[in-house]
Amino acid sequence: MKNTVMKKWDLERLFPDGLEHALLSKNEQIGTLQEQIKNSKTPENFRDFLFIVEGVQELYSDVFAIDEYAICLSSQDVHDESGHYVMDQSQRLKAKMETLLLTFNHYIAAIDESSWHQWIQAEELAEIRTSLMERRKQVKDRLAPELEQAIHTLSMNGFEGWEDLYEQEFARLRVPVEENGERKELSFDMAFMKAMLSKDRSVRASIASSIIEVCKQNQERFALIFNHFSGFRNDLYELRGWTNPLKEMYEQNRISESSVNSMMKALHEHKDLLYRFLIRKAQVDSIQKPDWYDLYAPSFTTKTTLTYEEATEIVIKQFSRYSQKLGDFAKQAFHDGWVDAEPHENKRHGAFCASFPNAKESRVLLSFQGTYQDVVTMAHELGHAYHNTLLHEQPGFAQHAGTGLAETASTFAENLVLDAAIDLAETEEDALSLLEMKIINGLKYTTFIPAKFEFEKDFYEKRKQGKLSSSEIIDLMEAKEREWFGDHLEHVNAYNWMSIPHFYDTEKAFYNLPYTIGYLFSNGIYSQYKESPKSFPEKYDGLLSHSGDLPMDELCADFLGQDLNKQTFWNESFRPLKDAIEEYITRTESYVS
Image 1 (cartoon, one colour):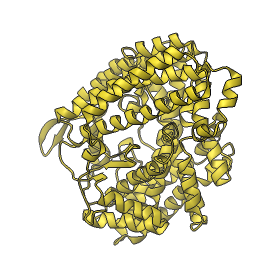
Image 2: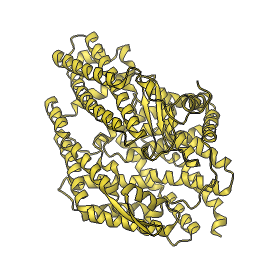
Image 3: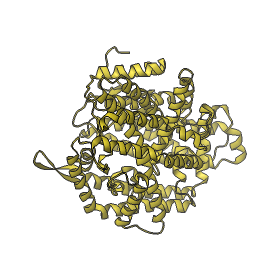
Image 4: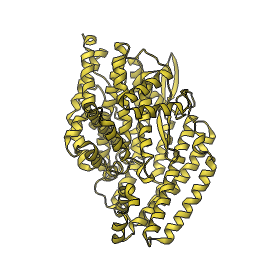
């Protein structure tokens, strides 16, 4: 392990023989395996079956790693043509792999019941038994193989075409703003960030007004896209005979409908946390009532700046306080070229963590500016990387957790560092800034996102009867936002359906809610850790290690002794957020007075 902290990641060692070689060989292997499965149709014996399973599983991991590499390469410099080329090649390979998986799923579904029950109990399949059983069940829930294959082929220019069109149209949007007396046009995302985070409320209000005006000018076009996108998904579900539009979301997140219902009930019962914070925020900011563009704007700003080395030491120290294993992991990530932290203008905005199961490593991208927020982001992404490290010890089919579970480790790691940063803050302003960060982030998951989920659910239900006009979509979103925010906001943003890409994701159904599931599940785990800090790490590692092969309900029962179907666990999950709001209200009393 190197002794210096590296600010630039090392991508080269991930594919020592070169990416072109990997792309070529995986394309050939997919074609060969596809033919083998088609020719055999059904396996004659267990050994033949195991050979196919291991071949598909190995390719699954390899293609996943190539896709992650393409994302990293294109993100470190968005203008690099080689990154775009690799991304294009990766997408083609990924499409071929998805076709192979579809063929494989039908292959195992065709095995007769007697052989299946015998083979699935084999020791060689113990760690991927759940995944194989899920794949077999999902095929039985779907249409005939040739119909599913036709739908998959047509969706490239249909369903996915609407997603592509949305992304292109959204990228073209420009918002006129005035800065220092100069009028300029910003991308929608950039304008939105300024509208939400500017310290000057008049600037926020002005840009927010421009954003709404741009949305009004483009609402018809985006309503058309949204209608066709959702119409495709509705029609597909109807063809498959699915009466519940949330079926796919439950499957992808490996959580039961009753558990989600219990969670939603708990969310509605804790809306008072949002109201208490908004009332105090209005008092601190000396305004009558916050508006939608005030939600993310901090009332307090940390003045402390940190060097990158200081930030890494904070993360390592807090991770080590939790467990030596987690602390040593953070040291490896920082010293061994896993993190790309240098900011530059061609770098992709935001942060993410990429997993490379074959190398048993991860890569984290962020842009370090010297703030405590950067430290928290660092901890969040390294939480993902730690989760990856545990999953890398599992077979390929047991390495991928649903979105809800994927957010568990990152939120947990974020809590570890954020709570410590609040306690160690040098000034009261720093502490309040960090508390606000924790609260606003929590409220995003417990109120902002659930409101979007319920809007989306209602929209899909109404869409079954026909297309909705843009004004009908706007009215639906306004009504749902008001249901969650009550009269504690001056105005709600009824155009959120235009600017949130998660509404237009073809791979993940109802992609907003899984983040709430992950946040609350992680907070529930964090509450248990606070009660038994010494014995908890081993239990936690076990839960993360099996997050790719066990459903959330089963994980919670086996490792936490809790029942997700009952509201008790979800109610307890609000404790970290509730405590933060209580502390914030107490510490801001003098500012109100």
